[in-house]
Length: 560
Image (cartoon, rainbow, N blue to C red; front, side):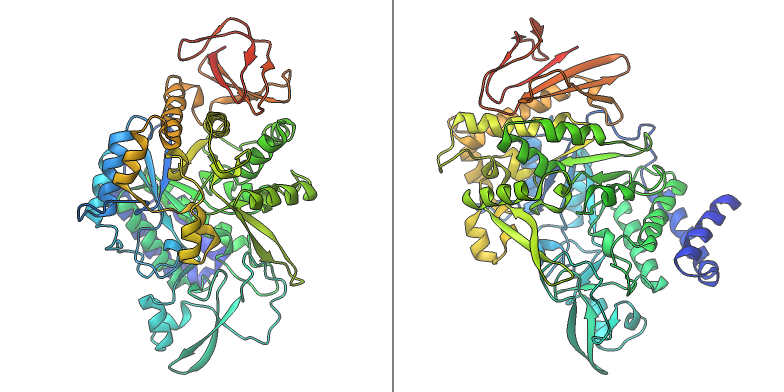
């Protein structure tokens, strides 16, 4: 390894810890890089493929009651049958043994949950699709062997977690949940308090201990060996704590991400790091680093609330202004665009983009439509709205419980924004199969977030999507049509130029994408009105003629 590369490793480790610690752990890190070079996929010449489409799903979102089949096998068969020509990457949300939070309280980082399948099932999915794994780096389950060893006062685990003095001042610590920060536990040597950012079952890891960092780097390398092309750093903003600070976005957190990225770059492998930081936009994009040294992709968190707001107001003014403000530091980074996920629609990223009273109005409308609103605790113990928990189709409902074709068109128009903006689109499985609010799940699991985490029996689902009159069929087929149009051109490459068209009615979002001398224009009507445009006698990408007027919620895509 070149002296420059070694110096860079030492520089990062010295900045996190000390020069002495950096020298002590240097050889361990070099060995991990050499290992990655052997087991990782060779680095692709393209940053990301032109038509990269990610499907986001739990390993057991689909299951088969009629045969004794691992849900991961069921998922593989479903995607192969219905979506193989539409998507090329699958983000399997944490598929490890867990105790709570639908997978995000992991018991064993290196095992597959037996209820879902085996590593062989993961390998089978990887034959036809790139895979995204979650590295839940901030915390681990209290039922993990690591934490059991901590409770038994066994080395080296006594310093893997953050033992706290409950009498100190924690008032500056940013709280993403309305739950206690410290959790009391009984250990072999007496009562202790440990740091728990998200819940008493999710015990935060201590990154002030370099041995703990080495353990997590091992997990990172293991996931790459097992076929990950993307690694999503879950709740990464919280990993490094320093009392007296907010304990979010600390410089050491960025340095640890830089170490992940440096290892990947030095190993010369095809692995993209994606950061998940549900925070205001300015803080969120800081995880791009300098455009070369941290995350390759970041979750574009303002997009879901802004898209919902745009359709509720039937006006694109706010979202156009926001899109025009987006900048990328290099051609080595891009946004991970999404509208729905296993979590809710975050409201923090909308702060400063949408007026506070408008955010409140939007949240109240979601509650009227059967959704919920979750809260976080401010430093003054005041609770404020944190996210809206709702299925995205239901969030866009016009009124009543009965779906109609106009509401299907409205939903698909919202998804067109996701698909045609600059970046990589992530499609949640419940969006593409037309799911609804899962109220039974909220009652069953006593969690607002379960509303969009439905588990569906595959035979029941296939009965629905084989019925051409069903909402599920109409959404699935409509979605696949949009994806087919997207795949007809290279203009949606993540690094393709983007221009928002300003000389249009505010009920229309006009997006121009250009790449290698070719360009396309996408027009999306966000209203239930017929709206005139300046575009006459254009041939759409599906060879249908278009003449000036957009129908309610119509999407039109044509070569410029």
